[in-house]
Image 1: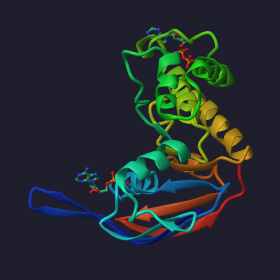
Image 2 (image 1 turned 90 degrees about the vertical axis):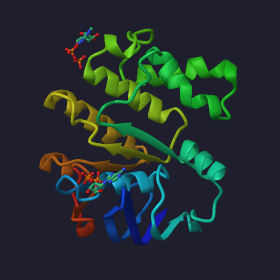
Image 3 (image 1 turned 180 degrees about the horizontal axis):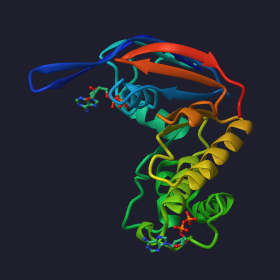
Image 4 (image 1 turned 135 degrees about the vertical axis):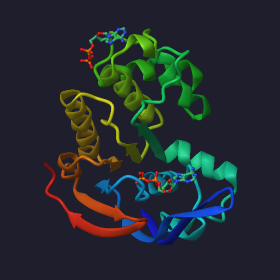
Length: 227
Ligand code: ADP
Ligand code: ADP
């Protein structure tokens, strides 16, 4: 589904160049649950941003379903991103001025789902993550675990093929983190491809495949027996 070849990413910090990715080759197939591990600063988030079309590489080729994405106009990239990728972040990234329902409806604004059906779909998604009693709550009225569930419901709104998660349990107590991981595993069992950055060794073993980064390079790639 995704094929990266010799991907490099350089950041320009006012004259000083940082090479965050130094030539990454990576193929990800539909249905995998890939965990990405490695020390802080090793390029994990940069890779996740490139995979999710949130950022572009400086060099290298990126094929999505066999098609090069570098030749696509920004508008088409945004369309692909909204349709195929859902994102979950460590700090939840909900809109503070919107309640749970409106946070989940937000990504549907740009979708094919008819306006009249959006509210019911959002309620269903929130119910699926166990939040039917929190639909009209604002993020600051919710616990961290609940905010991350809203974020998952929002990530699922457009029925994505791939969920990209950057340390999704990093701000949660361990038992709440485990619930989030269980949700991701359940989604994976239903066929959603999951790509998750973590620096927690136990969580690194949760997927079907674990890749590790050191200093901008992919240094190991192992199959896992999903725990
Ligand atoms: P990780 O997720 O493994 O902690 P990152 O991908 O965030 O690593 O960062 C890799 C390197 O790129 C680091 O040296 C970091 O400082 C640098 N970097 C990341 N994002 C930016 C940015 N937006 N601008 C400049 N440098 C960045
Ligand atoms: P969780 O819901 O992840 O199990 P908690 O036990 O911390 O976590 O939260 C229980 C309830 O308390 C939540 O439903 C939430 O509505 C409420 N709550 C938690 N933290 C806050 C907060 N900072 N402000 C207001 N309400 C909160």
